[in-house]
Image 1: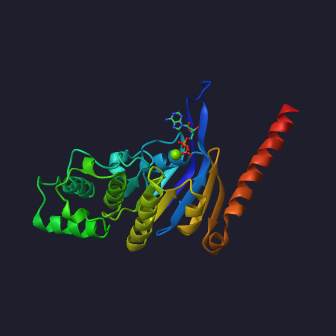
Image 2: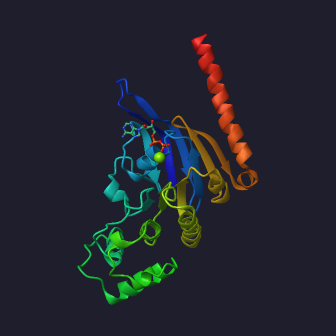
Image 3: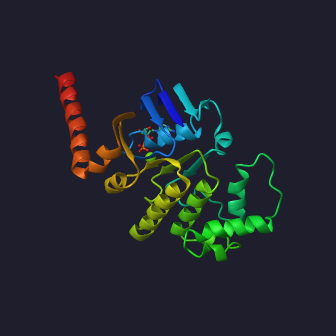
Length: 264
Ligand SMILES: Nc1ncnc2c1ncn2[C@@H]1O[C@H](COP(=O)(O)OP(=O)(O)O)[C@@H](O)[C@H]1O
Ligand SMILES: [Mg+2]
């Protein structure tokens, strides 16, 4: 389904600000896998998402989706088969457009033909049906401007827009981090439901370790641009927060030892 092959990205190469954001990343996702991604700030999580979405072209390596090498395919051409939700509720929707217009825009992503202006009755009914699954009453507010919605409502709409076209891959980048705990839980539950319902192949970045353990069937931990832990299936079910913290400490310890060796 998704194969990230030997991918490396360095920002500002050859300058004092040089940053190896990704180093030799290899990741293979099978259809229907739901992977949670954790790692400290600057570990390269968002850079990995951007490489998969086509927002960034890797310096080295390839991105293969459903057997097709898409490494050089621009982001807008990948949007037909990649759904994405960002941390910022403002990022995924157009505030000056109505709920219906936003959904029509998302729908047009998967269509070759240009969408006729206006929304047909049938499409309107479909939109209402999708919206009603959110249980937020948005199905009765099709003509409301999205800028008037709360952060949680907007994030729910973003999630719907990213998924109702049944993309090959769903990328979630800390998409609950900007919400208060109640809204975050709502969006987490919706995520579970949507991913289950459509059987979406999903990569979800989260800074919440408990969430990373509770959701999905595979967990990866990143550090310094590398994947340092990759745990699947039953082993993931047995995994605890203490295990993850130990792993963090182990890496930091090794790093400390190697820094000390270098410094003498
Ligand atoms: N466009 C960019 N230009 C320069 N440096 C960047 C850019 N994007 C990310 N970085 C750097 O690359 C590293 C990885 O960033 P990122 O992938 O955003 O980390 P994460 O999402 O895990 O917090 C960080 O050190 C960050 O500062
Ligand atoms: Mg990030």
